Image 1 (cartoon, rainbow, N blue to C red):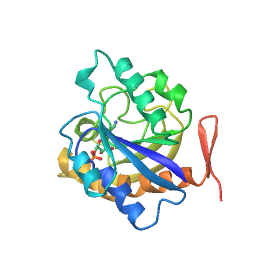
Image 2: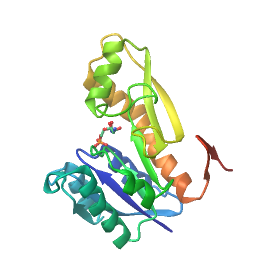
Image 3: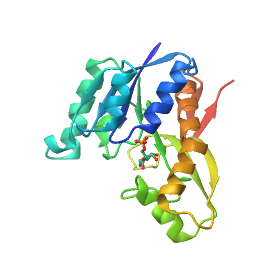
Image 4: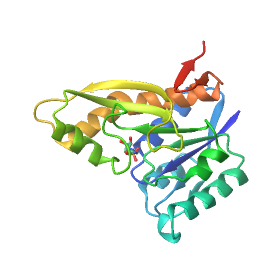
Length: 208
Ligand code: GAR
């Protein structure tokens, strides 16, 4: 059984999707062992507590840099014997030490079709603001392995979602979560836990 840590910063609806999938027996070969938040008051911590999952806070504001925080996170993840790190609405850009400690074992969900609307500064609601400003007719979500390049690692899965004429960022965000993120993320986590994701360069092959 692989031990999963979910890293969060806010509301935690993607965490909830993982918890619900686990409850339905859909995370095959894995178990959510810890939730770690970068913000002390994150509602995601309540979701973890309600599900009986240990919650930890490693607050960004307690550290002088992203690198110092990353080192503290790596230490905690090692102490907990974590096999898979899931970034589910985690709003701190981790430094190379994390990727070196967990090569091809960190999965992120991004609320757009990468490489569109991705990279530094593209997170949370900003992503949807930018998509609407640009006037795209389709957006969506991407689940990918984390590499040293922000939002640049090998793509595991993507799903497109329609942008409608009167959308505002909050409405588009919700549609992308419901139609794409909350489905793709648990599926990718389950595939990882069954050793069914094979990274070949930039391509991720899904094994039968
Ligand atoms: C989600 O839409 C997630 O894809 C996005 O933030 C939201 C968090 O919601 N993540 C990023 O933008 C990371 N670059 P949640 O806390 O309810 O899961």
